[in-house]
Image 1: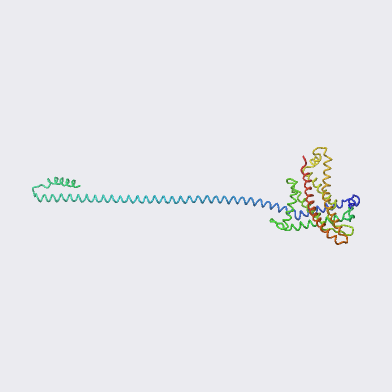
Image 2: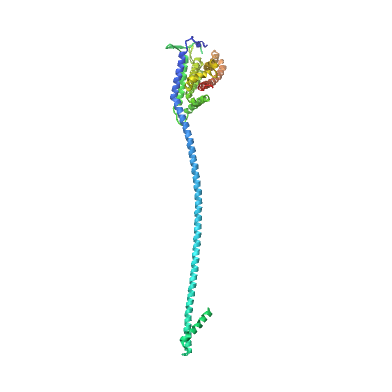
Amino acid sequence: MLSHLIIGASGLYLGDMLFIAISFIILMALIALVAWNPITKMMGERANKIANDIDTAEKSRKEASDLADQRREALSHSRSEASDIVADAKQSGEKQRASIVADAQNEATQYKQSARKDIEQERQDALKNVQSDVADISVQIASKIIKKQLDPEGQQALINSYIEGLGKHES
Amino acid sequence: MSDPVPTVKFLGLTFNVANDLSILITCLIVFLFVFALSRHIAMKPKGGQNVLEWLVEFTNGIVKGSIKGNDASHFGLYAFTLFLFIFVANQIGLFIHIQVGEYTYVKSPTADPVVTLTLSLMTIALAHYAGITKNGAKAYFKGYLAPFTLFLPLNIFEQFTNFLTLGLRLFGNIFAGEMLLTLISGLTSSKNWISYIYSLPVELAWQGFSVFIGSVQAFVFVTLASVYISRQLTPEE
């Protein structure tokens, strides 16, 4: 059945072997040209792209989480700031209120004092007027009563001392 | 599978027309298959490109299984072409069998030992060539004396048996498959139509099994080829 394989039966198989080898090499070259090179190139590019994409995704994820951290920090910061501002405003308002109240109190006491002083002054003035009036009148009365007998100059001091005693007694 | 072989003499060389025609058809089928699948190559694969990439990954996986490191990428194309060629060559005889007169013109080219032994010779030659270019001639010849000088004839003999077994394993499997197919179809050649009833399922079953064998043998051939290449690349300690 395989008698044709016996060397010499139909010559050496160099022709067939060359044919197979050459056609195989041509096939390999054609496949390389048509499919192998583009396919492997594309597969390599894809592998690179995927690796890059993974790196980029990792980076952007990190960036996003950083940003979120920053925002959270800023938010808490602004919250404390706001509460500080409110507290400050409250404090300053309180202070202002206290100072206004103190001022008003001071002013009132001042007014009261000056009023009292004025009253006192007026009283003193009135008293003084009354004193001098009383002295004059008394002297006139006395001089009218004891006409000529009394020397107005000599009696003035005595009467004055009287009236002074009167004022002291009264106050 | 008839005894006489159509031959042509050209430039003093004898050509077996049946083998050469089958090889040509096999090459054409492989090329058209790959050509059709590689028309629209894009970053995002679809359709044919997926199939082609799966095949490339498959043969690359075979090569990387035995050849370590960066060297594997040099033999990817060889393994890919070898696998497709042997696979198609194994299957082609299962459904095309052109017989004109007493000559068979188209059959499985791998059912002829000349074809399979040439493929195995190419593989072994490639392995030795890769070994010499990678490690230098000195290390290459030293490899024959490993583990010690007495192993020299054994090592030379091993290379010869590698070459023979690689080719003859493929030939034996495919040849046996084809021969049995011919025998089964021979059962029906009688004028009796009832013979079709029992021979058809048997033929069908054997054809299916031959498809399986053809695929496995293509895989085995490529696997062993990469093993032999890797053995030459990394000399034994």
